[in-house]
Length: 101
Image: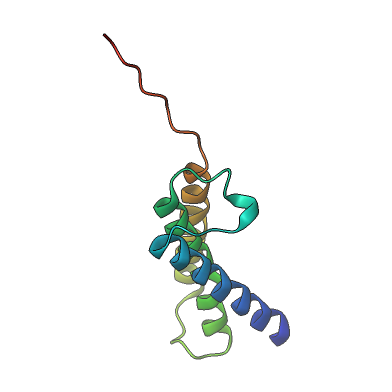
């Protein structure tokens, strides 16, 4: 079980690094470049999704102070779903502006 949690933490750190790269430089993975229209929103979403497994791993290895199960469950789910929502909205096409002459 510890290897699975450690692997999740590594994946989370990679997602946080991807989010920071999107925020700082506007870079994203090559297969996502055509879909992402709002890079800052995409970066924040990746950071929130990546923080979730890192914090869960900190709780598992008893590095972070233990909180009640309810607090961990609802706060981590809120982070995860907020991040996924931001990533989804960041990939929506921007509305075209109408010009009236």
